[in-house]
Image (cartoon, rainbow, N blue to C red):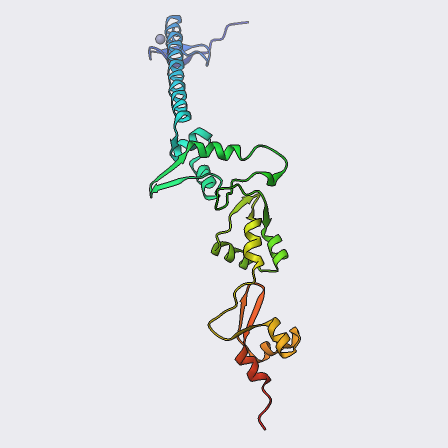
Length: 253
Ligand SMILES: [Zn+2]
């Protein structure tokens, strides 16, 4: 079998001279050029290795410094916990991680608060045992109602729960997409009968029932057909005494 007579024009990758190769994979014009190229490649690899270890050394040093810092920025906290900045802000907004805003652009996170956040959440199956919510005395809150539980237990509406929670600053935590409210605070806030509207002579449905000897449906029909004004406070509905009086007043003879 004859040797290949193919001649391919190529440029040497080392000396840039043109030469004729017999194989498409040939890169160098001579053994000498190939050796030069090989040595250079090895030199570059070595250099890169040194640079990488230097970068790692610096990173390790920075991490060591982060470990020792008492106060961290959001970015540093993100580095320390290997999260994104956004991830850290999410923890802050959810009330999981305590942070201090010194000025508009300056947020400080205490190293101790990061440790507290972690320690409050050991991996365990029982979900309600550990939360980072504290009451007015700094005591940890461990018992919660879901919003649904409050609605059912106290007979209030969803919006009422959130309105009262805001007004009375009921401590809350988030768990698996649900808001959980401090049980003790809820018992205090929702057990008390809401204040009736004061500015005018409002009377609750249940009082109308008792005083005027009407059923709920009768009141409801009066309200509907006479267009009486209504006010809802929690689970209680109020109407104006003057308006129900006007309807029930005996016709003038
Ligand atoms: Zn060459």
